[in-house]
Amino acid sequence: MSGHSPMSYNQGEMAREYVERRERGCYLIGSRVSLESIVSIDTHLRRGEKRFDELARASREANPLLYAKLEAAKNAIAPRR
Image 1 (cartoon, rainbow, N blue to C red):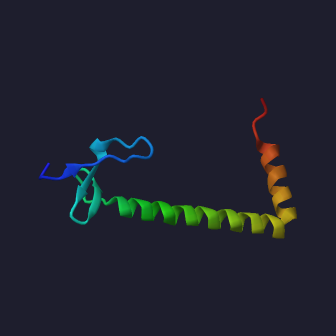
Image 2 (image 1 turned 90 degrees about the vertical axis):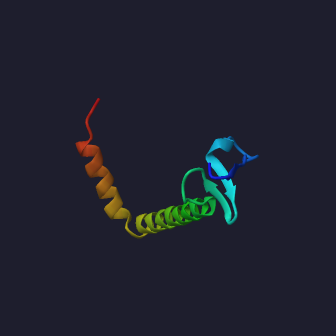
């Protein structure tokens, strides 16, 4: 493995065979993907999800009649069991 030493992650269940420490940080073994980049992507996605939830809530509050009509239409076409 080109002299890279695997490391373990003490919190959680990440197995040591997935991560290795290199000069510039920690990476997924056999890749150029750093753990820092994964954390950054995850943080970005969580912010986007939070913003989406905020916008959806604001839209529902600003347009209650529209959402009531959408819900009624959804219920009218939903398959009955």
